[in-house]
Amino acid sequence: MSVHKKVSAAMIIPIFVTFFTMGFVDFVGTATNFVKEDLTLQSWQASLFTTMVFLWFFIFSLPASYCMNKYGRRATVLISIAITVSACVFPIIAYAITGMPKGGKLVLMVLSFILLGIGNAFMQVSLNPLIANLVSGERYSSTISAGQFVKAISSFSAPLVAAWLGSAFGAWWVMYVIFLVISVVAFVWLYNDKIEEEERTAPDISFGDTLGLLKDSVILLCFIGIICHVGIDAGVNTYAPQFLMDAHEGLAASAAAYTTSIYFAFRTIGFAVGMWALLKFSNKVTVAICSTCVALSVVFFLLFTTIAPQNWVLYIGLALVGFGNSNVFSLMFSIAGLHMPERQNEISGLMIMGLIGGAILPPIMGAVSGLVGGQLGAALVLVVPACYLIYLATHPRKLGEI
Image (cartoon, rainbow, N blue to C red; front, side, top):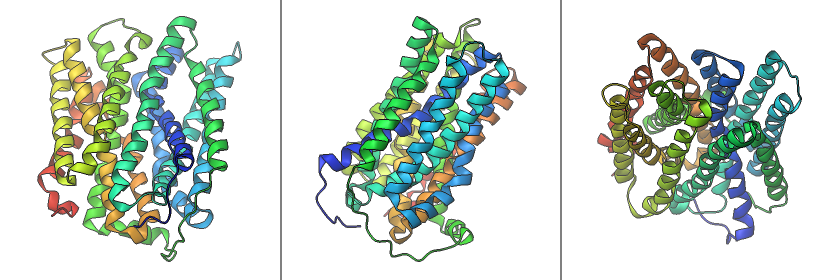
């Protein structure tokens, strides 16, 4: 991959603003806990909200890659922002209209989660490849991490702002008004951005041919790695407050929402470190560090839900998983994309299909927690993806490492 022109701040800043918009999807965990409390839902019912968001990554990722091929990467990103704008409108309607029945609120929130998932699927598929038009292959991983760092700032700040809005004004949903304004700004700014996209030289291939790329072992391992990464991310995002609420009976969702911000704070730190580390160290080293941190975090979650329910134990677990899991996506995405650069659009669609992990793991965590009778079940489920990441770290040659 080569650089075709100099990149100015005016070109790259709108992309990073869009990365900030991409972070809105991570608010689903916090929103789920608020909606669960507002509508008096059971845990398994609330966990389906996460599924409603992440299911669409599996369904729309490949159509989004075809959309990129036909209309271009920037146009596809603009479509994704427009869908995100519509997703922000429904919660505002649900909560701003006084006297809205619970059934009506539920329907509107479900519609919002669905549109948020669809918009984010298009955004994740098209935004990362758009970066390839601006930077060289050597800086691709670190630039993606820089974008993910901006996304993490959004993910980290939203639960804190929502918790403050909820406690101070009883209106956590005003967060969606803020999301709406930022999304409109991102759309207008990127629409006026001038990015020269490289001509696509790869031939059109069918849906089956795209899935056939998974026959390549490197692509397959990266795909499963992203499933595990997003499953961990969505699971911790959703269940971190519930870990604390389970340990302290009667604790309100608004009082426990800060645990999600602890996770996102250390994920943000992880992205900041990753921007530097991915330029200095090999993928082998960074995969090993990330996997070790994730594995240790699961140990602390197991301790917290069994013999050591002290808050500091949970905080250490959240810090480790936030830091360790932060750059797994950038690593898997860039390894796969650089492995077959001529198929980058299709591989981007495949990798974003891996975000289905966010729809798979949280319901399983909820189901196992119900069977076990506590959040130990959720912690046990996290053992599986953590073990897979350890497998990748101990077998680096399978990812094409030298």
